[in-house]
Image 1 (cartoon, rainbow, N blue to C red):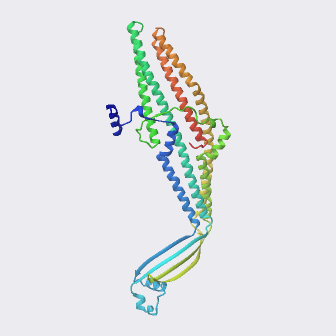
Image 2: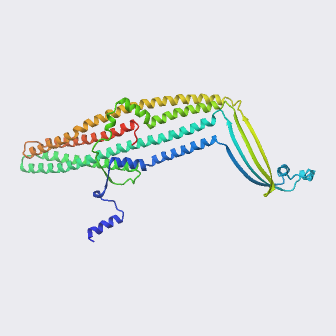
Length: 444
């Protein structure tokens, strides 16, 4: 094994950071996928959805009979307990009527076993309203999870766009630094030859320092964007990866759809609108539950029990019955509850209408942003090519003594600005695609 291979093997064995030439490249689709799979806040939303589903199952259990079983044992010389225990066990005798036996009975143990069943026959709709509320709570939690996933996908897309812009700006800045080094060397040679001045050399030096400062700034911006993406993806914050510039927009079919069709799709698919609709139905279920408090509750019960002073020798008994419960007055609590439920329904309806209006505006804004970004994207590359050719011509003229140092600086700045605009248009296009997809409620 060669020495170079041995060193490389040792680096990987020790778990040292992977060098830049070996770092992975993540596409936008991979970043969004990893965010949806591993993001911790989204996992909390998923747990909330599972919790709400369990609550709904718990509420539905109220529609079924309640069956319970009891097995107990007690031993005491308390007179009432001893008297009733002997009767329950069918072991009461004539001698137990003695005054001394009644007042001071011997310690007695009782084994008691019972099975009971209870079924609510009528409760004014309380149970059904509770089941409906719990089911709607589950629907709200599910839509909240979907909405959180959409927001995270959009955030990941925006952050990925910032990383793309920072990396492109970093590459442009690195090229500008190299070009500025060459321009400074040319200026120094021309000064030494007497065809340029110290002022020209100083201007080139200042320009070199400026582009180096810009390079440092964009490297810092890239590091911040990469750390934020790692947090979104649930990865180590210091993980290093490269970004891949998208080749085509993914939402072209969406942007060509008419606004009324997009609005209709949003109202049928957007998680926040579906959540608002479920909240409105939940408020209506609250009104039904409040009205149910005015009605009585009727329940039926049945039970079977065995009692004995010995575990294997017991007497059986059964019981059946019913119960009517009706709260005739609670100090106005029912009336206040109905008023509160009615106002909650009005609030939920207003919030739903406001959410619909906001969704319509969001669709229009996303369409306009996406259209503008695509128009800029179409001319961005041409502007960069033109600026690069202009810079080459100016440098040739500078070498020939036909252009000044200021002309070279202006050409370099124009190229940097053109490339920044090109990348900004690409970033705005992918973010616009994501915004429009979320605005109409399409899953990321």
